[in-house]
Image 1: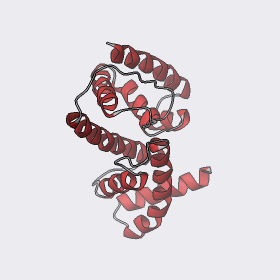
Image 2: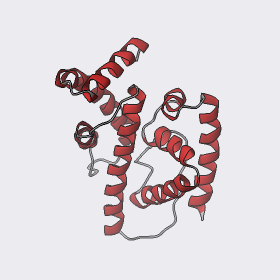
Image 3: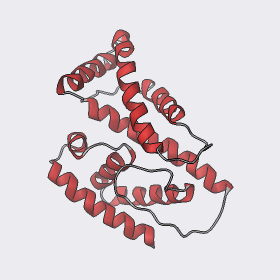
Image 4: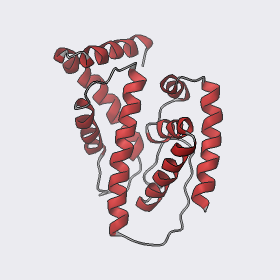
Length: 188
């Protein structure tokens, strides 16, 4: 995405937040395409016949986003950070329901290399990750937010830095420490 396209999206977000319904009409196809891309990446490799399609995830997140009231959108990355939080909640809620229905062994392995690959993450693993991330959030909210943005939303280091308002180097440092902490927490 070009800087101009990002700036245009930011202007539309701000106009929409100010009550401009025409801005929402223009904004919808832009953010919808990006949300589909993010959801597709999140759900890439999911087994055939899984319970959640990328379109469903996008629609559910989008419906929640358009109903958000009184948000002063700072920039495009801020919008997608909020979308990431909503997608995380949607995925974790569904995973908790599946895990409750299928109680099983507690052993699992999970890597935090990049964006979420649900094909490799079973419901109980996602719930365990969410629990660990909630614990990290109490200890270090910024690092927890960085994990959420990088892992669940697939934001780049630069986009994450913009949302969290720190340098890219700080994002990388916090990302590495948070991943190590989470992997240690999940191993216990």
